[in-house]
Image (cartoon, rainbow, N blue to C red; front, side, top):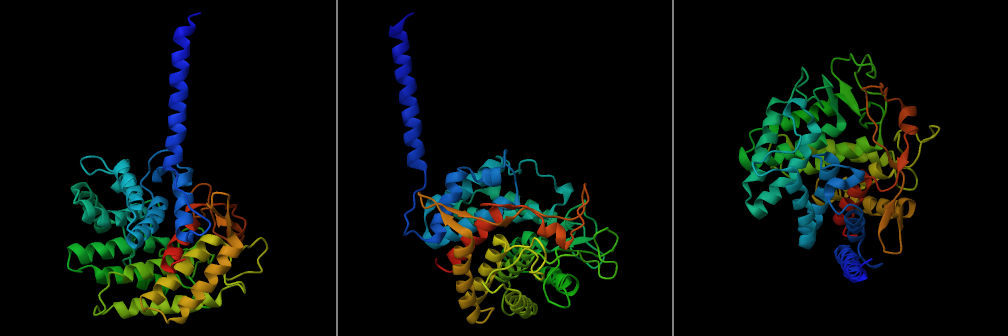
Length: 399
């Protein structure tokens, strides 16, 4: 055996391993016990998912709302701190999913999945920062999807091609902030009435008349198995659904001029849902998975919906859409959230518990959307809706 050849190879292997470990240590985002909650949350995400497309354990790059929800929180953190590592995390995701000609990996407009519109929000700031025309190409492509998106008889966007005649509450968040920003930036606001129409339909058809809280979905045709035969609504009021609705309102209002005739209407909707959401709070200041039935067997305090509502209350108050007292409510609920759901490890990276797994309606096997179905949904730690919404609320509250 030629030991003279083996020894240099072993030395080279060890050197590469040492360099790799050092490189990992250098790139790992470090935070201290005194760092803000926003920084601790960002560190937990980046360190677990060095590439943003990996969020929630995704195995291949994917154009997905989970990533865009999380990265929109990073965008707000970047705009507040001007720390380029947050911008780079967003840009790397966009560049991984968009090719040199401005095509999105595995995007098919014919699916008419309204979730696909949401990541487009990230591209406005990226285009402003870089003037890279690929981003503008994708922005326009997603606007084309909105233009041809199938609609219910009364004009509401279908959630997906495979869900005919159905509006889902999260669809407002997926489409309207992007749609509003686009039409104000490139169309002189010509589509603001259409955007307001989407909220009007939700307000008129998805809100429970008793609690004023939204159901997850509405089938205008009333044909799908989960639909109430009289109203067309799905059976359950989900705390994350409340959060989607409130975030959609606050983020869409960012682009509605105050002198637009529909602006006050959207502000009124936000005030109504804020008041009703606060009424539904647990004594701790948080929200149950099935928001209107805390006594339901198996029901639990849920972190993602709670964080979304906290963020929307804080942002709404900061923007002047809501009374200043809602900011205090948000601060108290944020503190309760940390106490109930948040733990930090020895590296000061956080874990958020009790995140509802994704729940849906219809499909195969058929999901009937009952209260029991939601209450029995398994919980996870550090799933993206909770991490993203907690990061958003921490930035908004300067925590």
